[in-house]
Image (tube, rainbow, N blue to C red):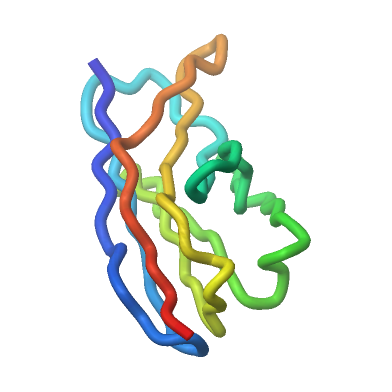
Length: 117
């Protein structure tokens, strides 16, 4: 069984920074693309950033230049460094990982990020 354990959320003022971490635990044959999604109240869950096993990254336009995704393959961990945070970044952030030959989809429990103005 695969579990994703997130940490690093919290309350921060606009302009501040936070770093999210997500470690993948369990029997993992192959850890493929990992990513972060977010969901604000009343809105759908949207991709924030993703990173392939080879290190290729992809970002939502709204976070380009402010957020950086990275991963440590030896630790099965993905990070999201969030700088210059804005109130509109407030959401529950979910870690996502695709594993195995067929990209089985796994989600973390979510971590709240609140940016005050």
